[in-house]
Length: 266
Image 1 (cartoon, rainbow, N blue to C red):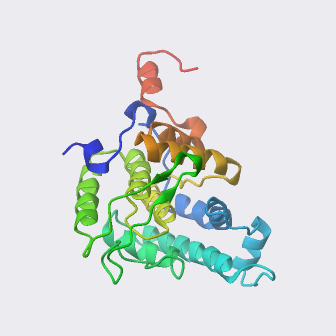
Image 2: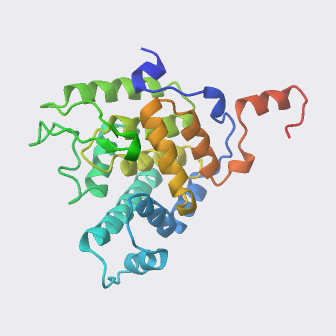
C-alpha cells in the first residue's frame, strides 16, 4: 500500500522541506521548555479556551484564576502536563512514533474532557458512538465508525505508521499530525495529541518544535476545514512550514534543486 492510500489523504510532496535546520537534542529541548507557556496558550486558543496568556503563565506557576471555568483550567493544566511528559520522553530517548506513546499522551491531554481517554475509540466501554467534526456552513466530517475492539482504527494506524517510515523526519512529523486529526483515533483531543506526536518526531531529530501562533488560529481552522473536505494536505503542509521558527531558512525541494544547479533562490 502506498503512502497516500495508507494515510487516507494526499499532498504535493514538493511543498515539504527537504532541508531543515537541525540542532542538538539539548538545544531543541531547552527551547521547548523555555517556550512551554506559549505552546500551551497557543494550543488552548485553538480549542476555544478563553484563558489569556498572562492567566496561563499564572496558572502554570501554581496560582488558580478566579472567574474561570474549572473545565477550562483543567484543559490548560492537561496541556502543560502533556508537554512536560513529551519533553521528558524526548530528553530520555523514550519517545517513539507508536501507539503506546500516542495513547499515553492522549490520556493526559484529554483527561476528564473526552468520553474516554488514553484508548482508541472502541477499545474500552463505549463501542458505538462515532464523533464527527463540525465544519460550520460546510457541513460535517465523519471518520471511521467506532467498533468494539477498534479493529479498523488499529489496522489504519498500523498501516499508516509503517508507510510513514519511508518519509524524512519533517514530512513524517507533519503528516502524522494530519493523519491523527483526520482519522480521529480518540473520542477527543486528536489534534492536540497529534501535534504533540509531531513535535516529538521533530525534536527527536534535532528539529525545533512547531506551535501554531494565536494570530494564525483562524487561518489554521480554515485550512483544516479544507483539508477535511478535500483530503488534500498540501496547504496545511505549507502552513505548518510557515509556523516553524526556522521557516525563513527552510528550503523546499524546488529551491534546493535550483541552488544545486548554481541558481540563487530569490
